[in-house]
Length: 306
Image (spheres, rainbow, N blue to C red):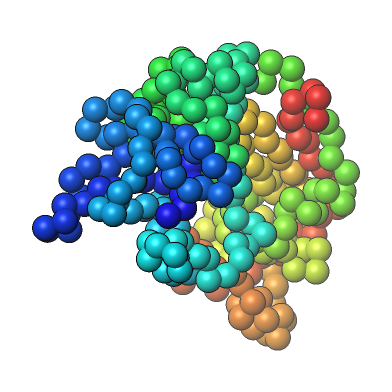
């Protein structure tokens, strides 16, 4: 039997095979993950040292997902999670909860040992939460939120429907300008951005659109009589940004240049075939608008020591 911090120890009834008791493994005594374990029981919230018997098995919640199989451990017959493929390079590590926990801990000026003591958990387990895409139990989140002076909702990233940027500002922020190359990288190849135009009634308007970047041009689909179509034949501003509420930092990129309609049939066909997504607004949006940036500027907010 081998386990990792954050796994569950489940003890089953020999007669029915149903769980009689389960708890979260918050402490290991051997580097190879073999027993005994420090277990925080879900029914009492108490931590005890456990030497698992034949009626116990390990549940690995972080591997409960597609692409993961379980193999029998030769010596014990217990199930051990085995990835079928290496995780992708873009996989979140640490997870969002871990990033928020680490940020709140640093804001409080607490070491991991101090925060773990307040939350009544092992420092090793807190390190695991901060460094891995873990899914801690509700009890663990309640204790962490109380120890860090925040809420479970905040640690889980609640308020996702609220406008971004409502978190605390960095204690020592640094605002720096971005060069053209970094701006192009952040624009990437597609996403959602905002185009600023003068509407048909002469009033300014800002419209979110699904966009692509093709041959250094920003392109998006719309309808001939839409507000976004007012960009055609004028110089417009196009903006994309990213706000990381968990870390209180972010960036923005602004492109300014003339906009026109893509009319060449082969170019329209190629754009349509290679588009990463259809417009989220739905409907028939067959008119492609192209913006050729004459200027490309951006800014990024980071901690002063980065």
